[in-house]
Length: 623
Image (cartoon, rainbow, N blue to C red; front, top):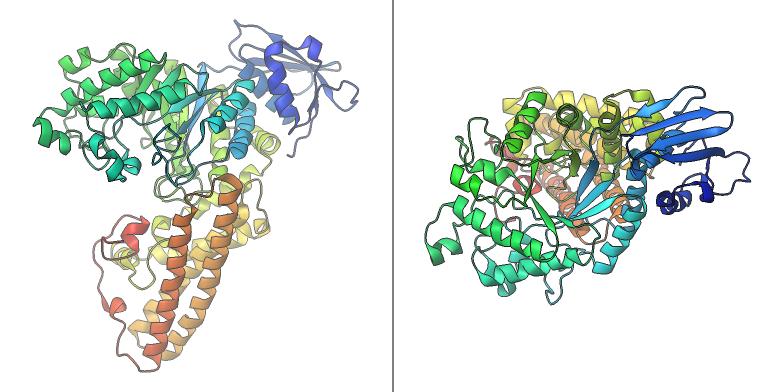
């Protein structure tokens, strides 16, 4: 794993609360209870509950590690493994919150395997995280619900118990994280089985008894699976609540009244099963927004929750304030204060950007938006902070690259610093990879990257639109990716623990595709048949890039995830390959004089769409 130090510990002298963690970590890191190893640094652990953080002192006799929570001892071990503890000088860190966690999306096609997530848990522990949630809309089994998570890689109860057991040994709390109102389209698609509980396409039907029977099963499942007596019940972004079957059956009611009634019922279910619930708090704040209930802007500083709704919020319900899009510390301070004004001490959810149409962690967005959130939490003494890792649009990010983002955010939370040198050392020792190279691969996310991956080579929906609205962008991007290919060349064979070879393949594809489309534009506009023949040759190169990309997508997917969901990536890339073949065939027909024009290339630019595959694969919505 790239560590420079070996830790030795004596079982009889070490607090029992650390034994299981040290044993688990010792299988994978140079941590040993064999005191006969002369190379090991003798380490003594001193538990002081009143000490908020960790302190390490090293002398000739070894290291003394003082800590309050077990997770702080494990972060201290990470510092020792990383060579960050000098002789004769105390090394101290103080975390001003009791919980630092993550939430991993397991509902957008990628469901991480138990083994791989256990590897994440080890790294998270050594980075100083002590809470984790697996976001599972439907990807867990429920008794007598055969279509719940069907063909989606759902976790069995035994798998989740294995994860919980391993996490507990490392001092990490696993919290169930589900949805109990919106974001339920994955099960509601099975209409023959779930029509009774459906309001709209993605929202459950409030006031229907069958809805609460289903939710009771969900809550009971996690009450009997995880040790934690907490559960995240979701309920965000349910803007069309009450506008489907509910409206037909019960007539119009204010969605705030429907929502609060539903929240109360679900909280009662949680209480009955001995769980304390938390929800994403955005729906409450949208109800008082002066800007409408748009899901993208719930935090209206001029808005306020209607008093009668605020008064009816169950007191045992915890709020989770989430935001990933703002880069001003004042924004986070203001909204944390607003949640506290309701009598709620919020958990705060920031984000390490694995979503947003990205094949690699978006470090720029993470540094820009998560860092001010961490600073605000430290200053306001927020007690619980976690980082979401979403998988929107198919979870095609190389999620292991996000460990670099989690490492940096942990350093900020513990020290308030963004110093790079210690981060490089810690990342090498704990995560076994080169921090600088992983972050450099984040340069895949240049101007227009969201479009390049999926834009159809014949239809060129956003290529054409950007040529009009952002002249010169594609030339800049092509030069950027050519440079990036050279910078990543030394990592072209590095496939583990983070697949830098995949990043290299993406960069090659982006550079070659942009060059192809630029050459095609010039040659076809001039009806230059010799140059169009060169385009056909270039297409063969791009198709090889697609083949390599599919291989590396498959490699990193199956290293990390269950197989379900990968079919989406295969369908997209195989379809893309076929479209390049079609482009080559049509060009050969045009060059031979068999056709007078290529209809798709004759079309003028329309409006730009989002970078989603569905929007760029066709001019039709039937995809």
